[in-house]
Image (cartoon, rainbow, N blue to C red; front, side, top):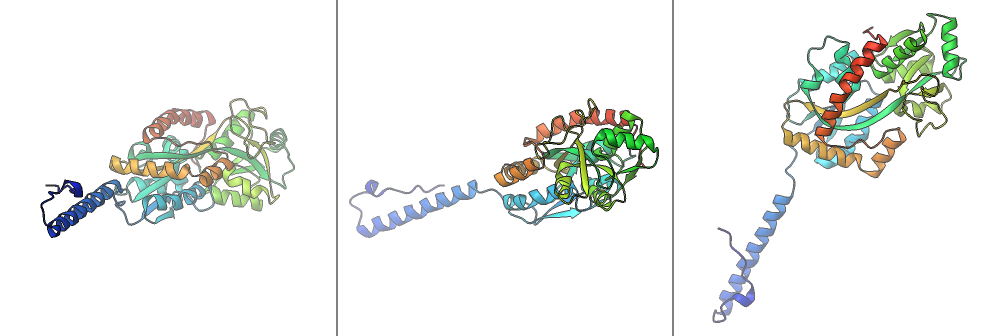
Length: 343
């Protein structure tokens, strides 16, 4: 039974002063109790984990790792718990992706995955599980184009000059990628297919190591996201030739697209999102989605993502799931067209 506080003007006038004081005090206490109850009802339940682990299925230095470290502090504030980034690279992201897919669906383990691990690898590898079934999409984080770039020692300043150089010396040149099946790998295979080039693919355990070796001159050619390549261009050791977006990158406005460089339909973007094990309860997935969208909506985070070349991709879990369903046949077709295989 709820005790409603009684206003002073409604107390019987014949009551002795001491009884009126007691009743007013009791009413006040009851009122405070109602306020406290309402406050508890309005406050969100504590997140059911002591720590949230976000697995980046690549070594440090690549775009996936960069994005994980951009969103983790904000997610920590939104959820009220520590959020750590756990790098588990290898097998073109399959190791980290499978690790999360097999984790307990309690909301304590998440994957910052991309199109490589979620929809591309299933067309190239004999996977132990299907990521599109074993993982539940939480929300998209970013979508960025690639940049075709070379080590500055290579005597080319355009895609046409690169093609001519490779044509003149079949088998002499190589290109790096973060692993077989990555969009960077497929972009390289598409370049070869479009111009019948003999360039050797050198796969790495992640985009970070691949980028480092191109900077060092170990491999002369590569594709990389605008996110990871932009800071490195200031060193002068790399030379960008074109981007793979449908239009020019805002951060590299003087750089032509591959389409402008004479490759119609050559449009490739890397997208990234947050995932949890498929058996994670829907309320937890929705809570993570709300927290992620709140982080992505913060002006400083939105600005950093925009500088990386990504549009605002916030949305519901249902929208992200529908987006992935549309991406699956696109990447399956691209793998077949490019002739890409696991090296």
